[in-house]
View (cartoon, helix red, strand yellow):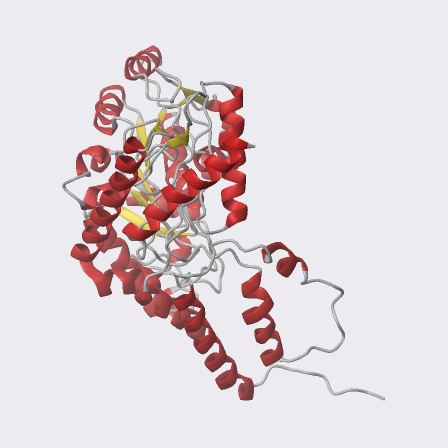
Length: 479
């Protein structure tokens, strides 16, 4: 007997939207008390599978599965006790705008396809430049995150570098060109080296000039390396916000050297660019306005949904020769009503501009300044608690929103045993689930590196973090 084929229908829409809105609101309210990671996460995620059925179960049943087992399989990273990977939450305005983006389903790759998506991206980029203190005449584009933002900025650097050798690399390719000299500190992030790999420059081309085990820039070494090029072009990557301790390269000094020796300065400010918002931290990022390209991440301190990043370029004319595409049915480049497919890696692109515009419109410069300053105070609060605890040790000064510390009980010396203890504590914290923070390696030692970026995080949440580390640490040390 032939069964009736299940197809999408408008009759499903109201019920699905209502169910998602109701259950999503309930879920978000529960984040204050839920464990960030739960013991059922893996099993719930792995319960999805099997072969594709000939007949579907319908939209309501499918959404119900996501709202039940799907939520059970999620790490609750949107909540206030997620301190790992420098992941922010989603502000209410950004959440609403993101749902609208899905409902109206725009592709701002072409203005004609989405005037509102394209226009809000232009507005949002202008507001972000203002927020970060970047010159108004710079160009910019939204991307999927810091990796593609680095790709965009470094693609402009590559084009500039090849033009200095008389080659249009985006048209003619690499043939006949020498290796690209790239310099950075030990703070260079894997997203930047991944971008270099995708651009054909190569991960191993980065010369890391370090003056200590933490990776701090050897400024004199950078000056020597640039001088030895004798005027040949090079790319310098500065890092505004290092992921283990929140440290910064001396961006102003790097800008001086780039200007003196004719190099391109690219600044990776995935979260550190937000230091510019407060007088308490702005000096850390001095000089980014003198770079040739700067990037930041939206799903970190801006607290908008995945995925979102920003790339800013001093010379906007570099973007279209790299990223434009032409076909008889596609719109041509128009500076007044831009089709964003010509300015960034994606041709088809999500209307993430709605969330960026909405959260900036809703909370403004002062709202974001207040959030950054609140997070700076919370990071200092953790640092003070660590200093006062006899069994904790701060491994780096608290400069921004990341705190680098470890558990070190009385009688334990530096070495493999203490590192192993801290790694075991980190694993147990993730399994415990009350807070979510992982380990790293910093100057050859294993510490924790919680990052404060979620708009909901408050004093009780960071106090619980310290309490959990000490509680589990004491238990692990005994065993």
